[in-house]
Amino acid sequence: MRRRVCRRLRNRFQQLGLEDFASYTIYLLDHPDEWSVVDACCRITISRFYRDAQVFEQLCQALPSLIQLRQERRNSSLRCWCAGCASGEEVYTLKLIEHFRLSSKKLFLPLHILGTDVDEYLLSRARRGCYSKGTLKELPKPWIAQAFDVNQQYCLKSAFREGIQFEQQDIRKQMPDGLFHLILCRNLAFTYFEPILQQEVLRGILHHLVPEGILLIGKKESLPIDGNSQVIKLSSLGIYQKRTERI
Image (tube, rainbow, N blue to C red; front, top):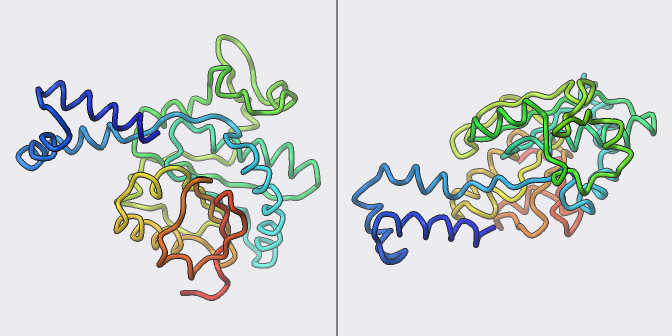
């Protein structure tokens, strides 16, 4: 993904007639409006349902404890937040897991999911809920047969859109209200943001995560060192649990 971003930036400075990244850095100092172009170049929009299946398999093992936590605290629903949700595949994956993996075990939820992203165009695609066949390749085939109507695209049936909301937000500037039992921030802040901003984002995420709640980041990502004291690492695939004490 980093190579993709570098290629976009290289194409941009070549369009401007610049020779290299150093020249582009100088250009940015003189043209602050250009930062919005840089920001757009750094957005990675590639996603798939059930992406990194092993990660979601391990997440499924952690979800029953969250359901128990919700019940103990008498919360009306299990609240989930997907930050940087792009066109919604990750959000709907959670909904499919609720139906096919949890409801089948009679683990009552309900699951309320918020997806946020800075790109309104991607969010409009998420709200539409229609996808190409290639984005579904990691999903079990029985799930596809039951959850999607197929025409020219694969469109989620209405039952799999319930309890889902999408909002335009830039996680660097704003985070949603309230507390969440599960927060996913995969392949975004802890890959593309500078260290100081990573620390700020992590503080904000942990502020919105209930004690004993689950945080899922990219499987190749790591948290800033100063945030590790607030979480317990449950898996090498990027699954963390917030400690019970309030920091």
